[in-house]
Image (cartoon, rainbow, N blue to C red; front, side, top):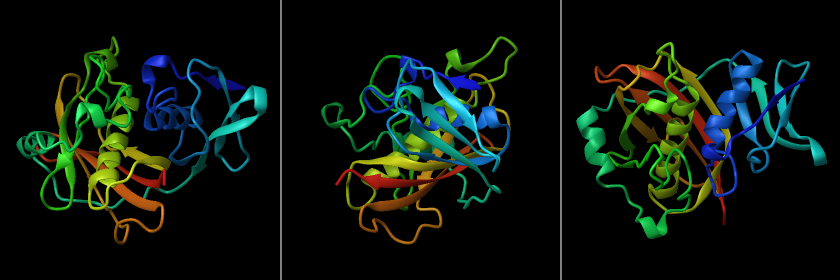
Length: 236
């Protein structure tokens, strides 16, 4: 049985692993496209069992209590699309990031938090209903052979969708409960990308406590290098 440990560095909500990064690592283990449901807070620095299922999916389980943390199910990739966002437009949107340091809901997140080692994925409104930010591949995500750990991209576009979900229209604090990503082209070390979050094919804003979203990454030529869809539930 394989195991997966989420190091303290890859924290999302305080005291819990970042959902996009953890989903990427689980899907990498099963080796084919999957959509991942987040069932419980993700323990940090804890060996979690990867239980492969006859369906081709897998569960990430915290052994002491047999708690299911994530559950991945095979699927045929199906993603909404959006118009490319330029790096300059993404930079300008970042400058409109709607959250102050004192109000930040997940200040310890390695992807969108405030710490010096965070990737600072701080998306702001583009003015057309979408949110965007520029994002540079961090040096620490680059392997010795020049390739990039794609899990950092999963994390970055997860957080980009989060800012759209929580701050476009009625503002609420929410957490990812379902996430699926497809990377279309290898990331280039040191390159900067434009990340965008929007409604995707979700009709309207909040439906009770539920909301859907999509997110994507574009290179400097406007080529989509990754896309994702996600489902969110508000705290209240």
